[in-house]
Image (cartoon, rainbow, N blue to C red; front, side):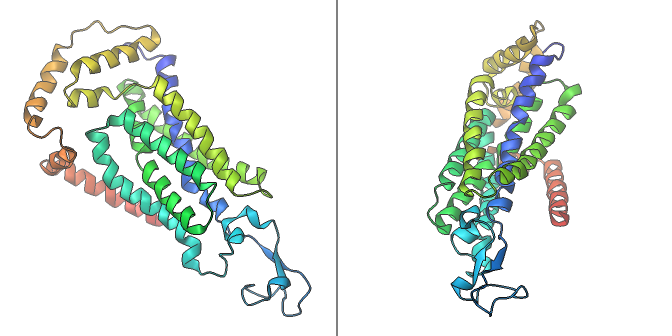
Length: 311
């Protein structure tokens, strides 16, 4: 692809910025679902600063410190409805992440590809976020959070694949780190938004994180190419070559070397996968046939589980 340049790096960073919107949807419930403070109104002697919970008090004896619309807990009176109902939206979101991680991975490897999967994920996540802002009750809110979690499950993976294929081997680790910096930037933006809307409705948080994400998806649609490697695996060699040439042209470079080695490297894979490469579960079958891949997957899952548990 020629010498790495500003054009490739800028596009890689643009792709990595998807992690910022992903992080916002992951951590937004910390602020929208927070349990606000309350105080005694002084109209009832049974209410005192030592009272642990206002649930047993008359409604006129206490009030929220801030407007009720600042949190779903206060707007829908969930404080006294039980811990299970309060945590339902967050649990639904991560249940959606788990389901999406299992189901959407096969689509990214087979039918949709990385680019379409990323676009579908960001648009679906953003639309779900906008609709969440208009939730009439906690049940609709939890359902939309599930959809949002299901959609965002592939954002990070597709972003990393597409961004690292834009640059050479020397810069891939830098591009990967850029994605995590963008993720950090995403959740660090939430306290600023929460402070801006501290006395306004929690619905503003979803609108101000989801609408920019929808606009970002338009940039992805216009500027990002499909994964060259995925095109090769799918037998679309000419499309893969044209994509590589487009990537190289970002810096005014052209690919002049022969692609004969590329054809030779993919011919055997094409013959081996001709009977089932179009299957949605072809990747899972391929992994099952490679013990080393299963060992690596088990090691990654174990490490991730440990890190998540400690976190």
